[in-house]
Amino acid sequence: MVTVSPNKIIRIAIADDIPILRKGLILLLNSYKPCGVDIEANNGQELINKIKLAENKPDICILDISMPVMDGYETLSVIKQCWPNIKVVILSVHYNEYTIIRTVREGASCCLPKEVDTDELFTAIKQVHNKGYYHTELVKHYLTNSMYEDVRKLKLNKNEQEFLRLCCSDMSYKQIALQMELSPRTIDGYRDDLFLKLNIKSRSALVMFALQTGLVTSPSEKA
Amino acid sequence: MVTVSPNKIIRIAIADDIPILRKGLILLLNSYKPCGVDIEANNGQELINKIKLAENKPDICILDISMPVMDGYETLSVIKQCWPNIKVVILSVHYNEYTIIRTVREGASCCLPKEVDTDELFTAIKQVHNKGYYHTELVKHYLTNSMYEDVRKLKLNKNEQEFLRLCCSDMSYKQIALQMELSPRTIDGYRDDLFLKLNIKSRSALVMFALQTGLVTSPSEKA
DNA sequence: CAACTATACCGTTAAAACACCCTTTTCTTT
DNA sequence: AAAGAAAAGGGTGTTTTAACGGTATAGTTG
Image (spheres, rainbow over the protein chains, first blue to last red):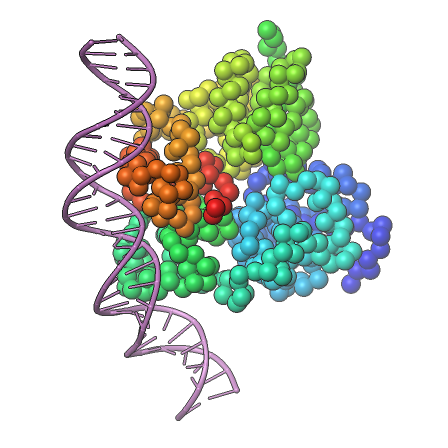
């Protein structure tokens, strides 16, 4: 257990699949006195492995959302389960109601867009370390005023994820059903459920959602 | 006119709307001996203004694609018109056939994904400065083997851009027609044209295209 | 065991999307 | 002035999507 003192160094771990951003971020944070970056990883899985091996666990993890192997949503979930004391800061291009609500409700201490300026990032890290959280105006807004009532339903199961991925293509629902070896009616049900949960009315909006939340990244390969 | 010598410093200008990436990139490049970053900008318009005022023009501009005010596509076009000797390197998360073909045909010396590692970035910059270009395998592949025959048609006009933007929403084509104050038939034509040009068959794929190329970024505000 | 829940599945109807072939107007180019 | 390209509008028919209101089954849990 670590005693928090104003002059103590804040140990930081970073997971991001963009090396130039990661390297840049490390240089930036190390140049900021109270911070020291101990761990860097290219994706969530790698980060978790490195934390497991680390003698001194980091105080704060900075996570990107869309990463290969294990994305930020899942990584956050694992970290909060294994090491509830480690604070998590989400730093991602994905900055929308879904991402904010899902990550903050899952235990993220802070959710920032990559467009954040360096001063605000420093402020955020300091406040997360001292007070346990840093919420921007948009985060505060969604926390008090979100269309997502049932937060548990924000996590998609395997089939829903696969369906969403295949929606991001030229395939008709019939073709998606064929691909997933399910009845077209079942696919219909997945769609209706998602429309209801996400409060949208068209497949186009579903594609928007999938890409903007980072739940789908690559174009679905036509098998 | 500058004489190229192996030991000369390569003057660099950067336009990217993500400050932490920009700052990081500057630290990285400045730490690499032959490079010096003179100009940084938050978007294309700002970059162009700064180049206009600069006594010594940069050798290389590093451009992001999706930026506010003026995006990378347009910025590239202006730079090559005003200062044909300035080399342009596109460095963006958008790394697909459209982006590659459009930027390289427009005169970009290099097109890299943001996932590039730092060594390859250094190599690319050195080679762009010395040989005038640096093409990755994917860029080479698309240069010899692209589905886009008529490259002039890759630029979308104002109406097509607006149509594409409005496609990224819950609106039906009828509603889009209303919003744009055009006949539904005209909108139908826009769609058919784009389908033909881009070799796709559905609005979902259109939305994918719009977001993955950076031609549309923000969700279209429902007016 | 009964109640609940999640998952897969079904049918009908109306609206939207897509394909295909076509005309008119305007503006540019030769 | 004629030819040609570009932009807007059109008609018609098929396929796909979306909205609505359901059932059946397996697994979980009190």
